[in-house]
Length: 92
Image (tube, rainbow, N blue to C red; front, side, top):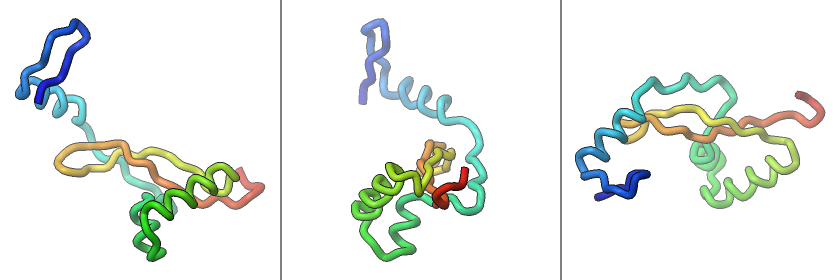
């Protein structure tokens, strides 16, 4: 794998891996109670991931759900992962 740098040069595979590791250094966030990933919601409600995402997007548009990214550890790296929380209408 080769990645281009801003000067038009190319990063070698090992250098690109080192950069990826340095950029992902940190701690995973502690996810507060009530926040769930789309995958978790899909599993808990026995619906497909795609159906869950479609419905979550509709609920986001209507203001019934809010989203926030938390850093989660996956595959030995830290990644920002969107989480969702139900918000009652009229409450902020």
